Image 1: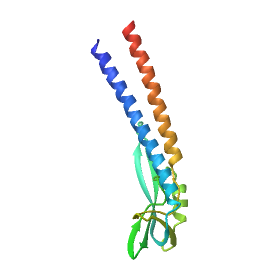
Image 2: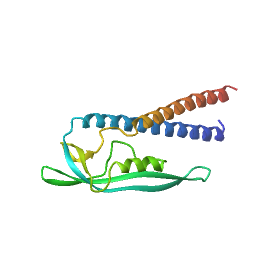
Image 3: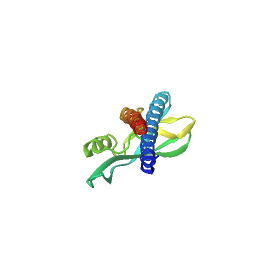
Image 4: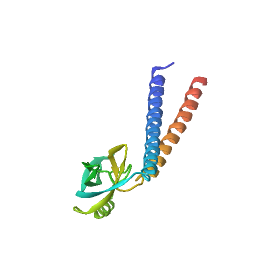
Length: 169
């Protein structure tokens, strides 16, 4: 068999493998975030105080070299559990940066510095906390994960058919 055929096969397998792994990781993360959000509905709460409420800006470039800006709402708060003081920064499970400044701005508007808030904490790990008992972007992660798996499967099937056709003719 021709060396270029093996190289093409190896590249195809890597492509399929990477898409498959990314898809599985995203689906697992989405499921974990949803489970944690469900579990947090039975967590006890305590009062916390917002100590920081800002928007973090980061940049990335797409394959064409265009610069994209990402905005992440950053909310930090102090809270106490059984006499110990902790610091938290998780608003909800999952989530993170967004491409929209207004969305990040709306989030931090809910948490001005100095405001008292309800903090929900894991009684087994009091450092594990959230302000909102929800999975912020689990639907998006789940959809993207499924798309990656479908692309992986389709590419694998098409690549296999193409490879078999080359070997028969």
